[in-house]
Image (cartoon, rainbow, N blue to C red):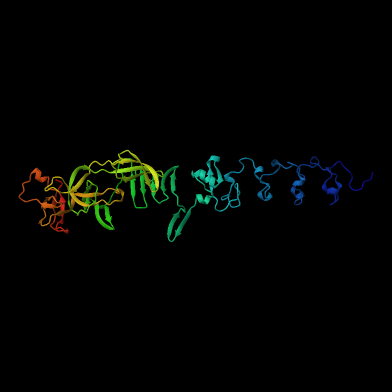
Length: 451
């Protein structure tokens, strides 16, 4: 039999047996060519034109991970949105697979992110990072009350190098607290007072505080409360000044501490709590009556308070009374201060008195003792003594009370007995008259003998 073309054999028909374009898809029945009729690897990617095979031409699950070479599919092969969280197995995306600063303004964490957004580690949700909200900040910070915006709850204005300064400015008026290991170490109150290891100005609480009015308080459970140490040389350790003028010092010389420009005083009070005019250096006698001080103890806005209180005849220690503190009524308890050594006084009226307490220095003008007319009596060290008119004094003279608030010179011929010695309270240091009063009495520098 004759044949057109090649004589048939049992060999397979190859592409070389067919002229180009002889076999088209129109000449192939549907499903005529199946996977079973195609040898393995007979069709490579070079046999496919661009976009010839799309997802519509592939059966469901026709291409699996096992049929893809490693790294065969890269991010450029994905269309936007083709991979969402439903296509990621649990644990597939870790922090190691995230680029630095992966969270940007375009990243969605529950809601759109803006530059002002903050993020918190939500330990209660397994260490997840959560976008802040006012409610979450209130929960984390323990804030109570109505906070409608994050900005109203937390606002920080950090300025560096402004006007040649380095400044951190918290743009808020409420208190600022500093914590270490979940324990508060310091705070700045809404009034600007600074507290270390305490939360209020309670002087009974351990810690220290610095008030905006200049008051400083140090409180410790035991041992030394305040330590001052000068290294390298002798000299002043503490300066005492008034209106910018040095009035006295505490200094060290070798192993000796000196209290310089020293006048030792005692608090005292007249028996009727009056405040008449008393000339400086006036001789004062002690009385057989103690000076007592009382206070009201109460709590206001969480802070323990103590204020001076003048005890009324109808009141006793331990009584609870209603007290108006800065416009607010509080319940206060009357307490007595524990002083056991200060006695009442009077201007000396006894000639050669044995109970001279010292001489008048000044009224106690401190703000904390409103209601009490306390005075300071100079009795130790050096000070001026008011001498009666007409007396002639010389350094070394011993002084006694003249019985009218002034002093007189002990007669040189006086025999020194115990009774006489008990009347001597000062020795003249100089006959320099510091001041002369209208009645002719004058004051001169003296040293107290403490007899």
